[in-house]
Amino acid sequence: MKLKIILLDFDGTLADTQQLITNTMLEVIDKLGLEKRTREQCATMIGLPLKQSFTDLIPMDEAVADKCVALYNEVFHQSNVPGAVPLFPKVLDTLYQLHQQGYILTIASSRSKFSLLQFVETFNLKDVISFVVSSNDVTHGKPHPEPALMTLAHFNIDPSESLVVGDTTYDIEMGQNAGSHTCGVTYGNGTQSQMENIHTEYIIDDFSRLLDVVRQLEA
Image (cartoon, rainbow, N blue to C red; front, side, top):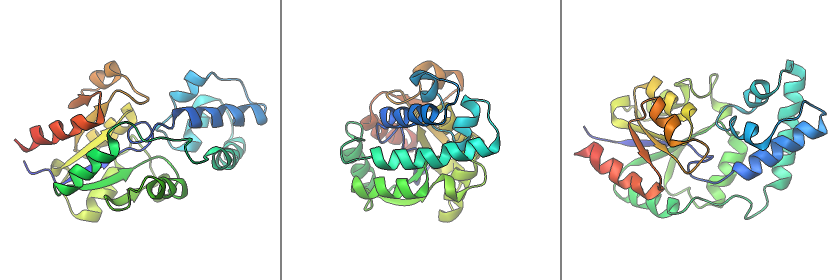
């Protein structure tokens, strides 16, 4: 098999955004006087489209959900100061190595387009990331295959020639539903057992090990 493209999740896979995301969610819940939730409960929602992360977390109607999204974006923008979100270790070097080896690198994220492109700029990823799919680009977010299928259609690449990399079951299920190979990372918001339970093809605990996964797929 010839691997051509790697679809990367952002939050919890490339960048350590958990603290900022959960801080923001907790602040939104507090300011809107909603039912209290723990940081751990908020963290389990990471990877879902933003609106769904609130509606799955707390029973609410559409109007309240829309208020959550608007306030979240406002608070997140204020809190996302330089240095608030770091890349995970070895991410940048590994991405540049994969790019140099000729693989197409893309991002498929449940994050908004605006903040996602901001992060791509901040982390100097423009030279290696060829395509970005955000929550604003799709009708159905993860675990639906639409973000992956949109990416593959853009490059006219068969799912069998693609690898989805993510830290949550939502990422992996998106890849599986699209017919892609899958690789889960265990240093983000998901766990080894969660990845094993849904039969993730490859599981790594260090982003640089993605180079080994690629070699195995090419063998």
